[in-house]
Image (cartoon, rainbow, N blue to C red):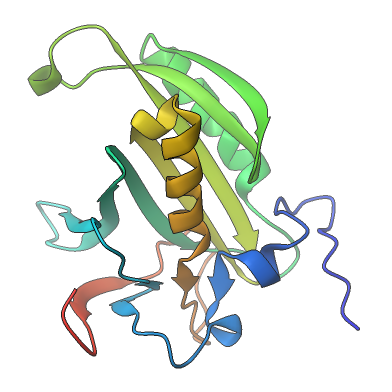
Length: 195
């Protein structure tokens, strides 16, 4: 019997291996995932997927998922064997939001500790602050970060749907050595069917 209790440095729900997000070794091999390299997404009705590309390098740096009148941006990172990154990442995010003139509070959510932030809106979104939730899960040698916007930042029903979407993600860390905090490479989707 394995002990799923997180180490003090690791921040993950006790049921992560059962409820997700999943490591590639834990995923159901017969499910029709959309394969994006570092992560796999389970298609569902009403889900739209966007790849966020860094202009200079043309590298995919994040996956945007639009679902339930909400947005979920996800990024998989390599993590050390010894423990997770979410605790220190939360501190960095909190400092960044405050430096941008936003407000942030840490709270306990269904996925563990999360940050609820009011962040300055992008220039094309008008002025003012918009609500965002920063979530993160530490897995075996990986860390999955999510940013939730739209309805799921404040509406419990939309939040439950987006959290379920986040939990269904499979992280494909691979066996090659990677420095901690490096983005696990993402690629254009290849799917068994259409998404």
